Image 1 (tube, rainbow, N blue to C red):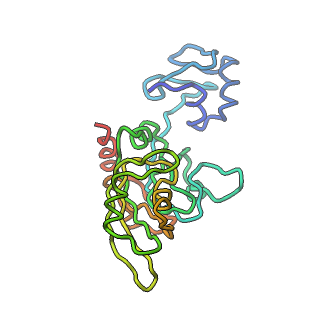
Image 2: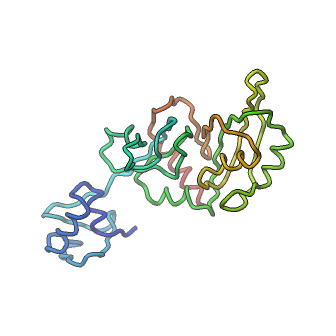
Image 3: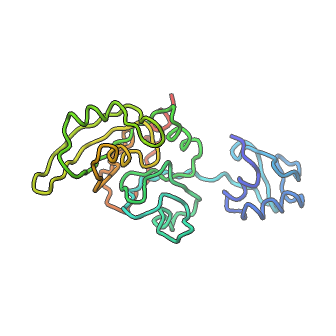
Length: 240
């Protein structure tokens, strides 16, 4: 897949994107033996031979991680307010990676981290309807009747939510809290919290426990593991 040259150079760790632009305009970058000086020029980092400063640029190695995001962590590569982000847990990873989709600041659970833009598109595009499973704890007795009604769609500020599956897991009479499992195919901002708010059920805890066939098994808060090649292959198959 073709990308802008300055993006390829920065992702390969050659230099910053701004410095890459300087290298291109000064004639220090070649593609398949030809000097390229025009900004916006594209190349395929896998198929084309790209040289910068006389050195062959190697394609960025693809990385895939399954991360258990803790509470009070921003799902972003940076935060202007200086709050902790998911990137703080990946300081030893040399490659540039980013989170696929998002989890709210006070939501926990399964998050995929990668530098594979194609996979990011597959997993986040609404038309692909990747299944995401959450366990949610709310105040009060949440009945199967409420679950049935909400599963057909709830009007929130961004419109009516898509149909989803809601299962009541348990009600704790002493604490007056109900734990439910919700399976969604879309990922609107704070969607579950807004759905519950519409029916006056304050959310105490929200954990994403499943992402398609992936689960949190073997992970603790703040830990991660590499996805296997078989898992990556199965994620790509979600597009077919």
